[in-house]
Length: 147
Image (cartoon, rainbow, N blue to C red; front, side, top):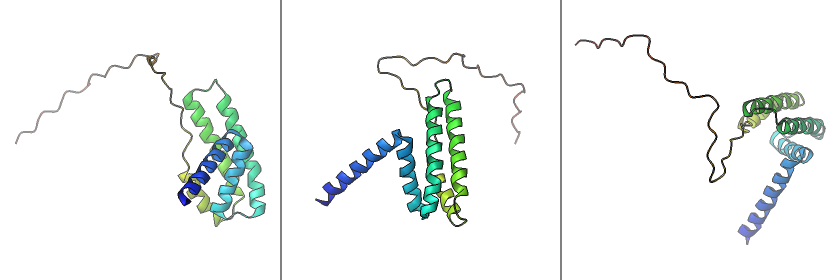
């Protein structure tokens, strides 16, 4: 019975997190709750950090919706925005909480470039530029050492 109950609670949490990720405000509330627990934030700190996280999440959504960015630039822009948000959050923390926050953000995965997906039955697109040929060595090989 316990396993069934725990499975149900886990499923409910997973669904909540999935929904929260699609809504910047909900995602910020979830992250604020996580930070409050992990860093023992005061109510004032939580209230100060929540708008920072909402703004950061909205900025990341805007970056993700920009179709003109290449995958590399998208990843770079997302990581830069996350760093800016992290710096703003760190300003609201005490000196005792900052090392815990650094540990928290080091465990968080970086935004990565989206990998192109290939539909079944289709061929992947070849790169626009041909692969470079290996360069010929400019120096003569060294003579083997004599015993």
